[in-house]
Length: 511
Image (cartoon, rainbow, N blue to C red; front, side, top):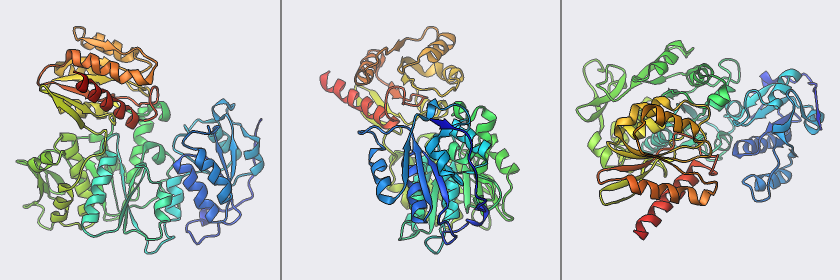
């Protein structure tokens, strides 16, 4: 059953700006039961709010099953309904009867989701988990500083790098947010933190206000890069970029931007920031004053030193990064961005270098699976959009490219055209292969392209690997860089990458 309407009790949410504010009895609806949704429900129940979680039906063996059981233990209600089958502007009867004074929305809900349209029509305020966490950040004193990281690609690597550098200097630091640890869990950790390095997706940024009591005022912020992505969610490239730009609002110390990406510079120029906040650039070229860059293979800081007009501080070298597996150009850029975050917090250059010496990339991020017969097999399943795949392809000279998946409304023509000359061949995976098929026909009509037409997830990668082996020659890289999300055939990019690595190892052991 779906009903329209709701009524408010006139609670002044503007006064709820602290863990010590009176949240008791506040009626809250939480949309979604992933890690974010559960963390929001758990937090609000702890504060004394009356919480009802609304989610799609939970399967007994699914990832949300345990969280659904725990809701009853902590004292939150649960409604399971076909949320995608709702008519616009309607809500499940239980939510209407709950008469929520506030909705907390998980990042996966599109702005035009029926429940959000219902909330707008009913006058129910909608917050994301990040705004809620910011208002509650003073549970453990002293309050941690926040550093914000967004971008189309490189977010997780940069967050992990910055956190590692800060920890090397002795700071208590928590990488959190879209990286997998909800910020609401981080702010409630009883040990407390000096710094939270928060990865923010465009979904989370979309719901953040730029002013008022719920607006973030971070120590430092960075947008690493911007390229079309998630257009099916945001509705347009302009809306996507506007969401990303929110990361810089009210920054107090350092707004860090990519000197090679004019869009990020423009975001900083247009941002309303705290007085005294500095614009800090990073890029692979020679740095100017107030920039991080590379001079003859040396990564340099010309921003956080008094004599930045004439001097620079050495952080590390490209050969050292290459030995640590961090030498790909796009990873070097992430290192520079993370260094800027850490240096803004007075982490000494020696600690930056020490942190880098022991750092390793996440699994499925340009990870070498095997090398045999002069052929390297690389898993970059985390390249879930064209921008990430572009960086991965650009690091190779001759490639057999395994590509495809859920494209999220993004055009792949430019990506294919840009890398035609380095392609030995291509293997297209995914349920809908038509856009890639057309792009290869248009821009590489003579290229050998195989399609893996299988609905069996267990067979997709073995078939792709065998086809790739037919094409690869000594000196080539067989590169899984799908330029697409994985959910059409796999549960996650991690499962996709693991399937690829397993198929490669099985093939090499057989041959």
